[in-house]
Length: 175
Image (cartoon, rainbow, N blue to C red):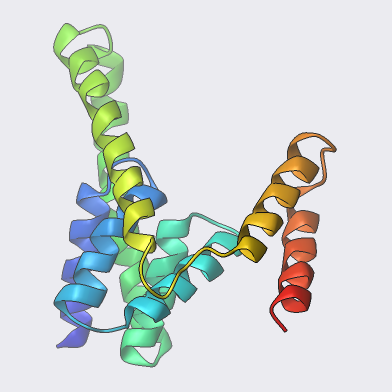
């Protein structure tokens, strides 16, 4: 039964998660934490952090982790990952077929313009949902953020190296 629920939840998330993985986070949290209770909000925050650091899109990575966590096996991970990707795959096939014919249509252009603010709103909602009582921001976090920002922006430190440096700094500062 949980496999069918996982499939249904991630089909919905994949279908209505406009704007990519970060925009999906609020939908994912609503379903897997609030509605079904498969994971706690702390586990969700941890999964988001891990999904950000691993290669690949955050929505797919989090689906894989949550599917595995909810079922305790690889089948749950595969079902959730497949389900979150399926709507996008089908939509891209359909859109690519019809877009060439209708790309200059004013209604199609208006629809894409209308999706932009909705995408920004979904990303903002994801950021606000991650700001909960388990995720407080202290001066150490702000210090790591500012140092990371300056090192990447000003000194062009590679992002992967920056993840390692930030992890070491976190281990030292929070030990």
